[in-house]
Length: 273
Image 1 (cartoon, rainbow, N blue to C red):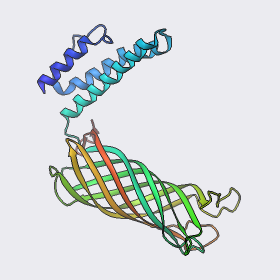
Image 2 (image 1 turned 120 degrees about the vertical axis):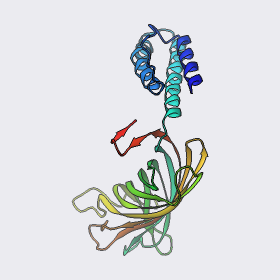
Image 3 (image 1 turned 90 degrees about the vertical axis):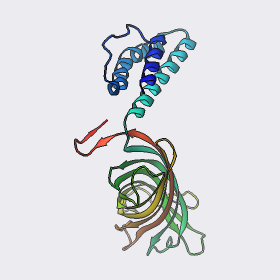
Image 4 (image 1 turned 45 degrees about the horizontal axis):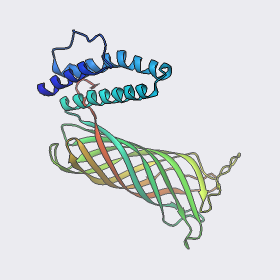
């Protein structure tokens, strides 16, 4: 790590973006990335923004933009090499199989999809937390498949996670359970015609809530980068229609994502770094 730190210092010295190189560098190696992040953003970041709007030579501006992004990447890489991250985040995509219980038309299973981002926390014990922000298309279709009702939601599930083995294993099976809330974005049929027009008596309510149960696994692709996969069953607990009773969302979801290290959270101190 000392050699990496020395190489980073030498690289900064040779970078044309750095002026008035400070002499009060931290002696503690763990503080080095944080110190340089602040210094770089104060000096190079300010100069970069000024030149972006005032410099006549666009090629020079592009070069300085590249330097700026490169240095930020080096700072973050150096920081991640130091900390033992237990918080990660990344993109997630999935396929849904959903229906609307007791709906007069859309009561059979149909296929939809979802995409979004997620964040994981994995503690020293086998317990963890998973939160997601998803755009999901669920709903249902008629028994003969001729009619489909697509309900598009912004869904926010927050699930407790229990890992079946400890940290340090390359393959970590897991069980998950927790609540979710969904905010209806639009409702259309198979022809993309609005089936929830604005007015005093909309057919579909704007909020759905329920519980999610699932199981899956995390697999280490390389150092601190994980493949996350799970199979989940969502149970809608609220009636989603205004003119019918006991109509609930039901859906199965198969989801795959990739997580990257974000930082380290200490439950004892409540601090994130």
